[in-house]
Image: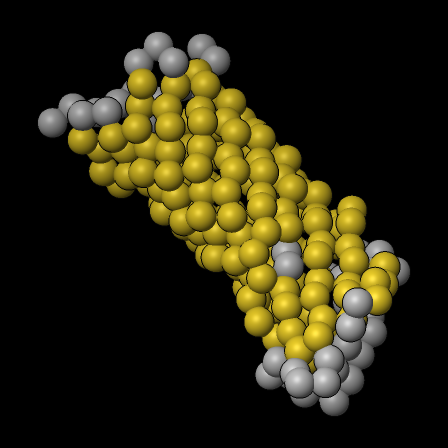
Length: 192
């Protein structure tokens, strides 16, 4: 058994978000016709050692699509949204074998909408001024990652994250939050 050595790195992660909207109207009623939607995500950032050779922190810039579908026999609707944010995280390497590292991650994301459209029966509406979508969103995530280290280059990784996102600035009676399952593919470049 050998242990791979971490150094400072720049990373690029991309993959798929599978998002479920949790919507409550002014009477705290949910919409049973909402379905999960899929979208892309991109993240670029920096990772370094935090305290020991097994604990790391990461800071990055993220772009997330949080999308959903809905409808019934009379109406159909769809949401397409993009949020730009700052992602921070703590990673713990709990096992290493040869050039493969196994990590768990806890993270926080603060983001704001940069694009948002709602389609209702073929008519499009802008979501940027809808309080339940706009403003500052706070997200938390937990995940796991397998990282294959390539000496003198960096690494490739494959991961899964589960996240929950709430709107911190929504003062309206309608409330919206997101639950997201995220599949992640990463490229990591050593910088020292």
